[in-house]
Image 1 (cartoon, one colour):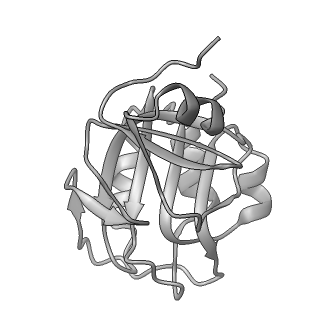
Image 2 (cartoon, rainbow, N blue to C red; image 1 turned 180 degrees about the horizontal axis):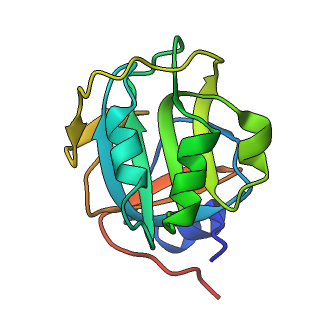
Length: 162
C-alpha cells in the first residue's frame, strides 16, 4: 500500500505524532507502513538478523541503534531476508550500508545515514521494548507510516483518506 504522510496527518491530526525530520529514504519503496516491531541495540545487529528472519507481513522493524554513526545495522543480506519474509520496511536510528543494492529491493528503508563498517556480533540488545528517538516514543504493536515527507506514529492502524 502507498501512504502519504501529509494526507494522513491532515486526516488524523489527533491520532498521529511526527518524528523529527532526520531520516533519509534508501529502500526501493518510497512509502511504507505497518505494525511496529522494535529492536534496541548499539553497534550490534545480531537481533536485527534474528528478526528479519521471521515473518513480517504488515510489519515495520524499528531499530533503535542509539543514533550511532560508526557502524551499519542493516546491509544488503539482511534487507534480502526482510524482503523474503514479507517485511514492509525497516527504520534505523543509526546507519545502513550496501545502499545501491537496497535501493533496488521492494522494501522501505529509512536511516540516519550510511557507513561501510559492519557491526560486531555479540548478541546484545532488546526485542519489543518501547524506544524513544526523534521526539517520539515508539511502542511495539503501534503503527508507523513513512514516506519522503516524514515518519508518523499512531496508536492505531490508519487508512489513507479518499
